[in-house]
Length: 390
Ligand SMILES: *[C@@H]1O[C@H](CO)[C@@H](O)[C@H](O)[C@H]1NC(C)=O
Ligand SMILES: *[C@@H]1O[C@H](CO)[C@@H](O)[C@H](O)[C@H]1NC(C)=O
Ligand SMILES: *[C@@H]1O[C@H](CO)[C@@H](O)[C@H](O)[C@H]1NC(C)=O
Ligand SMILES: *[C@@H]1O[C@H](CO)[C@@H](O)[C@H](O)[C@H]1NC(C)=O
Ligand SMILES: *[C@@H]1O[C@H](CO)[C@@H](O)[C@H](O)[C@H]1NC(C)=O
Ligand SMILES: *[C@@H]1O[C@H](CO)[C@@H](O)[C@H](O)[C@H]1NC(C)=O
Ligand SMILES: *[C@@H]1O[C@H](CO)[C@@H](O)[C@H](O)[C@H]1NC(C)=O
Ligand SMILES: *[C@@H]1O[C@H](CO)[C@@H](O)[C@H](O)[C@H]1NC(C)=O
Ligand SMILES: *[C@@H]1O[C@H](CO)[C@@H](O)[C@H](O)[C@H]1NC(C)=O
Ligand SMILES: *[C@@H]1O[C@H](CO)[C@@H](O)[C@H](O)[C@H]1NC(C)=O
Ligand SMILES: *[C@@H]1O[C@H](CO)[C@@H](O)[C@H](O)[C@H]1NC(C)=O
Ligand SMILES: *[C@@H]1O[C@H](CO)[C@@H](O)[C@H](O)[C@H]1NC(C)=O
Image 1 (cartoon, rainbow, N blue to C red):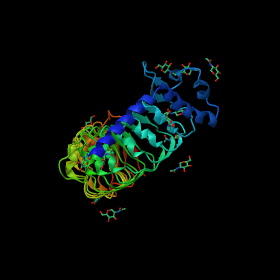
Image 2 (tube, rainbow, N blue to C red):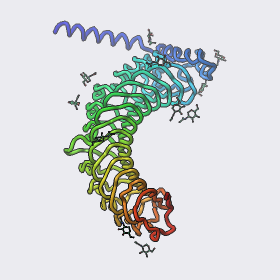
Image 3 (cartoon, rainbow, N blue to C red):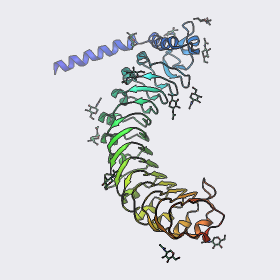
């Protein structure tokens, strides 16, 4: 006990001495260390702008607090910088926004960045960073843009402590391992983009219980298991959900109806079996619905005709059978119906569909039907639609 108190006092003293030591001098040194890398790489305009004879607060891309002359934001996007991120940046103890997007920064993300007490936004998308995201970094920021780098980290279970996290984009990296169920603890999360990585394992059901989450993008990974693990109640306001191009199996669960705010749903290129759930019409705000390239069977549900917002319906390469229901003629916003390669679909495109003038994005209605529709009859075709048949 005594030991602990002594330790606490010691820590307190260290902290005080650190904050005394830290000054605008430290900021200048930190920036100069960063600039050194830039000068040695090539003759960049920053080398002539970041000069010691002007205050660093007037340097390009640097924003300071007015009173204490401390760096609060560093924004150097799209400058073709081809260096490593200097570990000295971690000494900018007032920094809250770091924007280095769209350059060619390479090497790792310095460990110290995870200990910057005021850092809220880190945007390093479109660079060539490798290695892993320092675990401690998850505790600090609320916006993390890491898209399009070569990061290889896993997502650690301790991500669950990142309770301030709102936007997190790790897409287009080489992240492997599972999505830990602890992400369900991120109660402020609005956007989670993990597409185009090497993630495996199940989609944690806890993701569907984050009421703040609006966009969940998990496409192009190797995720498996069912679409929604939990058949229980879900509290979700998701409007974008993509599990495109994974190895998700099982049926479309009927509790998908609890995702009432969905306007984009893609489960294409997976291993989803069974029927398209009969009650799919419950997704009354859906605009884009992609279920192509799955081994799904059964008929096309008539309830799809109730989704008046629907603009794009893609069911290519499944095993759907039976007729296309007349009810689809009610879809006045439909712009594209893609039903190619469902060799057991029979009959005709419902006549009413040719009356769709498509107020949506696509005009006129396109119907993609090649290699499908036994006994397809051409009499029903008016010239309102554009057809691709082969
Ligand atoms: C600052 O120093 C640089 C060389 O380091 C020089 O080229 C520049 O003219 C100086 N600017 C001012 C305002 O003195
Ligand atoms: C650092 O702050 C002191 C006052 O706190 C000020 O006099 C000095 O000009 C500042 N230095 C820079 C480089 O802004
Ligand atoms: C550096 O760039 C900033 C922003 O464009 C400008 O205001 C400042 O005058 C420049 N300083 C020098 C020394 O060129
Ligand atoms: C990225 O940088 C290049 C130049 O290096 C520029 O042409 C392009 O518009 C930038 N893109 C974005 C999204 O800022
Ligand atoms: C941070 O600043 C301190 C004090 O100026 C210095 O000793 C240390 O080397 C700096 N750290 C980095 C990573 O540059
Ligand atoms: C990824 O980032 C690089 C810069 O490192 C850029 O050249 C490339 O266009 C980006 N790719 C995409 C898909 O944005
Ligand atoms: C990161 O890339 C650098 C070259 O830019 C390389 O030297 C280093 O080994 C790489 N590190 C990892 C962890 O892949
Ligand atoms: C983070 O979460 C883990 C368990 O997920 C916990 O053991 C740890 O104490 C938490 N705090 C920090 C700062 O990592
Ligand atoms: C985080 O999530 C786990 C599992 O979902 C849960 O057991 C735990 O209580 C949550 N809270 C914290 C602070 O880790
Ligand atoms: C698809 O799921 C079925 C069981 O539903 C399984 O037998 C088959 O191996 C899976 N195929 C792939 C490519 O994962
Ligand atoms: C299509 O519209 C025409 C008039 O524009 C109408 O006569 C016809 O009954 C409509 N067909 C269907 C199936 O709604
Ligand atoms: C195709 O049409 C022929 C006659 O036009 C009919 O005998 C046959 O039953 C139809 N087949 C299907 C699958 O509807």
